[in-house]
Length: 401
Image (tube, rainbow, N blue to C red; front, side, top):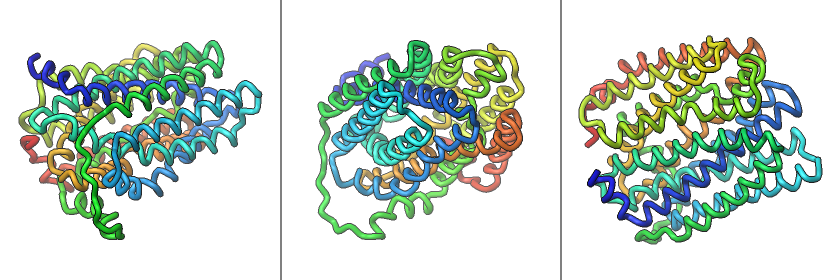
């Protein structure tokens, strides 16, 4: 409890956590609304997958340059600018909805903008957190921040589903307000920004890639999460499961989107109270295997309650992976290249969310949603077992430091 109170005395950390809470809530609301809107327009699993693909491509192309930017400019201002751009996307959706000209092509175009913007947002936010708290409490700071973000990920989809019942316009307008507030709050965050004057070069831009490639523990942890998200993610197919398998509406979709975050939130509190001290590597691999197993259960389920429970377990297992991976990354990475290493992490993790959505949508279009989800869960379990042999230094990692 004393450690928690100590964390809350770091005002810039608390403000940044609040700003991220607002923007994650708004993003989750936006994704629920856009997915349901697209499915209303086209009724196509393929188009749901394309929303993810159209976010992935610009994220893939821009993330490494974005990491270099995050190491050269004020990270708080960069984050605030990214959130403001997302607010502009929501404003455009408000206008398009009011004018009744929302279309498949418009949603896909805006998905490109969102993907490009988040390419800059993710390395900025990951590299900023270690600047706001002492390294001695970093694991707990990440766990506390994860608790707030998971609460946003719970409330966002549920609120988005409820508001969507009043119309898509209501959701988009709420997103505008919350994103603008988040951007303004981020501008109040203070930290010591060291201006860098070294020349920009290809080798400096690739410094993050080189660092991760040489550090087999980080390479194993990030690539493990990449394959888990790529294979095991069922998020893109939730509108199909909600309507066609579980026979529910936007409110049910919101609960399904919120269930993984509910499990992650509970696990965040557990890790905040009892941080990992021993057997870090084996626990990380076991968590990914549990994630895959719970995904299989969700894919087989036709019962709404069981589906919610399975998704909650995936969230709890994923949170162990996220907190462990981020803590290892921040501890082992020098500050001068944190943005570029965070950019590599964004490619492995952030962009793989969108690519995973496309993969799920494409497989579902060919063989159905159940085959897509179940095969992805099986693949995730296989990857977790394979990483025991491929990355033995990761598996044998005992402590965080």
